[in-house]
Length: 83
Image 1: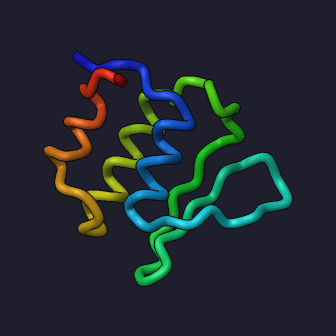
Image 2: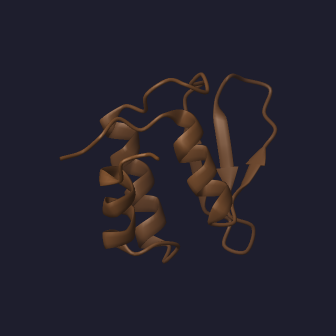
């Protein structure tokens, strides 16, 4: 069973994986992986807002296809109960 993921949780995961937050003039959040240039672009979520499923699917695909995380590790992140 999947749990709701907040923007803060997803942001922490991306930063742990080595992404950097790129400053933007708009309200979107842009994360870039320095060595490959892989980008994750998300709407202007508030820190405690829950991430829409469509955005989680897109992030998962970007991470897995760029070899930045194993599919099973991301799926585990989605199912993990926060402590």
